[in-house]
Image 1 (tube, rainbow, N blue to C red):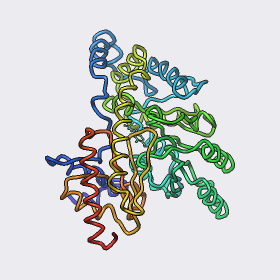
Image 2: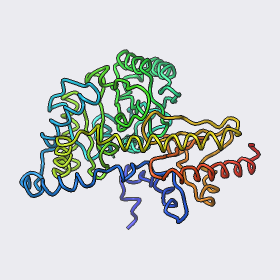
Image 3: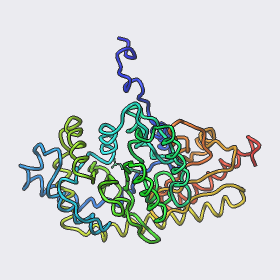
Image 4: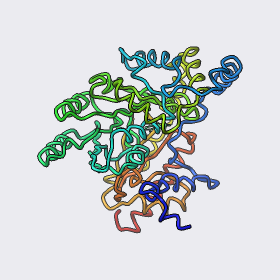
Length: 411
Ligand SMILES: *Cc1c(COP(=O)(O)O)cnc(C)c1O
C-alpha cells in the first residue's frame, strides 16, 4: 500500500521533532547534555506519591480505577482552586472554569482544535515553545511571531504588527496571542509588569484572546513575583494553562485549563472526542498530595537545587565566554533554561556536528522557530547534569564554539 496517498493532510505533515532527533545522541557514554528540558528526578516526591498511590488504589478504587468525567476530579479541582489562590492570588474560580487535561500538551492541542482554522492567524513569541508550535500547526494556521527581549515580548513590535493586520482587514483572523510570560522556554526571560499591562491593553483594543502558558511560575529562585496575565486581566481576556509537570512530576501527565466557562466547555467537548477523560488515578494522587503536603515547602529543596545549578552554569559561561565578543546569555530568575546567543554568522545547527564529536549537547535555536530558520542561539538546560558536569560541559561548549568559529572565519 502506498501510505502517502492514503494519509490525511495532517498525517503527511507529521515529522519527528528536531529535539527528539538530537537527544538520541545524548545517551552516548561520556556525553554531557544541556539538551533535555525535563526536571531532575531527584525532585520527585516518590515516597510520598507511592504511599498515596497505594492508598487511593485500595480505598478509592471505585473512583481511581474507573472511568472519570471529562472535566476531571472534583477533589483535585478543590485543591487547585486553593493552589491558584495561594500561588497567584487568583480568586473567583468555579468548577466550570477548570478542565484537567493530559498534560499541558493536551491543553495546547484542544485550544488549537477549538480556535484555529486554515485561515486563522496565531501570534506566538520568537523563539517559541516547540510543543505549542507543533500543537497549533495541526490546523495549519498562519503564524506571526513577535521577538522576545530581555524583559519579554517586544510589545512595540506586536503593536505595529496588529496595526498592520488591522489595516489589511486581517485582525479578526487573529485567534490568540500565545505567550510564556514567566521563565520562558526556551528563552529564559520574564515579561515585565509594564509589558504585561501593555500586552493586555493591545489584546483589549483588538479584541484578541491571550493564551498564557505558565508551567514555571512557581519555580522562581530569585527576584520578585509578578502577577500572571490571568490575574491582571481575568477570564474574559486570558486563558491560563498550568501543569503539574515541573512542580510535581511530568509522569502524572496532568495539566489544567483555567478560563471562561464557555471556552472551558468547548475544550471539554473537544477532549471528550480526544480521550474521554484523563486518568482518574493520577488526578486523585495529585489531589491527595496537595491536600496532605504544602507544595511550596516541598518545592523549596528543588528550587534551591536549580538555583545552584543555574548559578554554576552562569559562572562557567562568564569564565569561558567573556573573550568571545558578541556572545551573550540570559540569566534567568527561575525555570530550567539559559538561552545563549553567539555572534552573527554562527549557525548552532551546523555547529552541532562539532558538538557531537566533543560529546556536548544543546538544542539549536532553529528548533524553536516556526519556519526552520537558521539561528545563532541555543538552549542550555541546567536542570539535569550535576554541577561538575555543568562546568565541564561549558568548557566543551567553548571548544566547540572556538573550533566552529575558526573554521568559518568568525573569530
Ligand atoms: C514543560 C512545558 C509545558 C508542560 O507540558 P506538559 O504536557 O504539561 O508536560 C508546557 N509549556 C511549556 C512552555 C513547557 O516548557
